[in-house]
Image 1 (cartoon, rainbow, N blue to C red):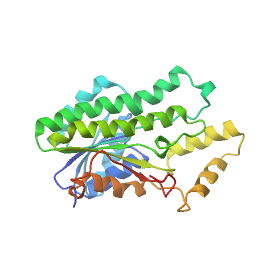
Image 2: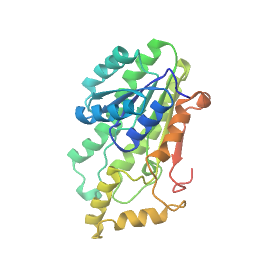
Image 3: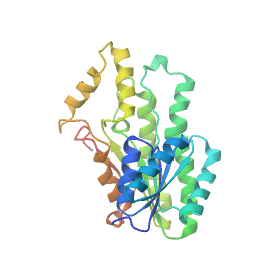
Image 4: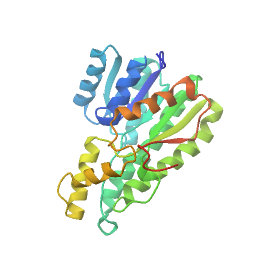
Length: 259
């Protein structure tokens, strides 16, 4: 059990990649704090983890609302004694041409993907420093942050910013024994990609599912990623095996974007 005795807070953990990581962390012995926008879904995800023999608590929070971050940390301390691992997985996507981007849609993406992430990282890092036992912060980026993509300006830019934030935070927190790393998934079979497929269908005039088929065909390993494909990297970066790794963002994308 590679994460025994650790407490992990995972945002966007009621579905997709976040839920998969939460389940894997619990299986590796961590106490898991499932964070999502809807309390019912948080409770259901936590219950499914407990049913499989893990320890998990659900807490509803919109990470784009910075005022709630202190309450998240307080809950972690009250329920589990602190935070050892933070996985910033919550994310918002919007696929649209440059001439249709609105201030509202831009803010929606950046308030969650960047601003909310930075200030939650700040709140959790303060707690980790006060605990005096180091910590792990893992930010879920995207292959879209590695290269420009048509109709992906706001989302891709937010993920590129996240990769920079990961590096800069890593250098600041290194003296406290806190590592900060990222994971950049490629095309992954989640509800988010269902939304992307619908939006691309409208922009290109394609049939539903056609953009998905084309994206899958372009992956060198020949298939869409699954949420479980991200788990191994997330466990590795949270474990003692990654003690000497920081400021890195690992592509887990089937070979889509060479580093």
